[in-house]
Length: 246
Ligand SMILES: Nc1nc2c(ncn2[C@@H]2O[C@H](COP(=O)(O)OP(=O)(O)OP(=O)(O)O)[C@@H](O)[C@H]2O)c(=O)[nH]1
Ligand SMILES: [Mg+2]
Ligand SMILES: [Zn+2]
Ligand SMILES: [Zn+2]
Image (cartoon, rainbow, N blue to C red; front, side):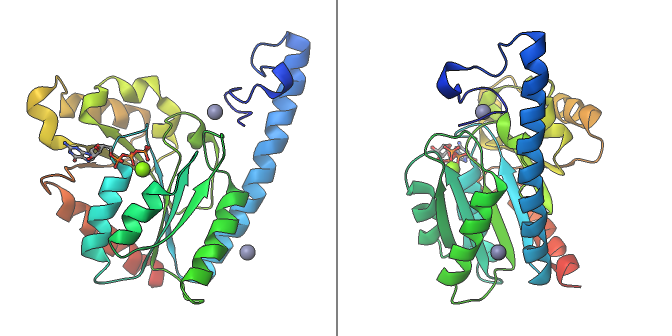
């Protein structure tokens, strides 16, 4: 369960509905949890660096199109390089099965209730993936986080690149409402661009809002359905893989 948003509600104690006094303790507990996560994340990062792996953490609300984008990515880049995927979900193997069907190596991580991935689970998953790959390492490791635009932003997993995705039907007001996901990411992808004619979604306005939160963001606008914008995404990934190997 999650001690960041308080959704875990451990033994009836909602961590955010507390008095000032208990609040102080809550902050300490949170800091301890996060620093333990970060220590394992750093060790994940060393694993990735030693093996020349580019690790990418994908964060979005449920249904924004993370797995669909991975399916398209594996179809194309899977012919040029080895792609591994860690699929984070609360339950089911469905997303791992989907990307495996496209030719990726994939391990499903089920959190059994938690709304985000944490570094120790990713560490376990990474070693399971290595085993699946017969001891080889992928060129790119995608980590698809649990569908949630809030809590995953607080947990560094050891990734080199963090990607936040918003799909057109979700609405153009999302960056300012979920600022942490945007402030901590390197890439912002607007997905389902094929639906722009049917929604009031001003791409320029959304880009501007996201960039005002984080000017470092590299922005892509794409559709996994029509293929629009995918080439730019693939070129970006190829370039990053080259940099990592160099
Ligand atoms: N029109 C349109 N639909 C899309 C696009 N990408 C994904 N979808 C649809 O959106 C739905 C959800 O897509 P997923 O890829 O499963 O979303 P997800 O982010 O992986 O969802 P969770 O893993 O549950 O968080 C599916 O019905 C997809 O077919 C797109 O570019 N255009
Ligand atoms: Mg998915
Ligand atoms: Zn949570
Ligand atoms: Zn290890």
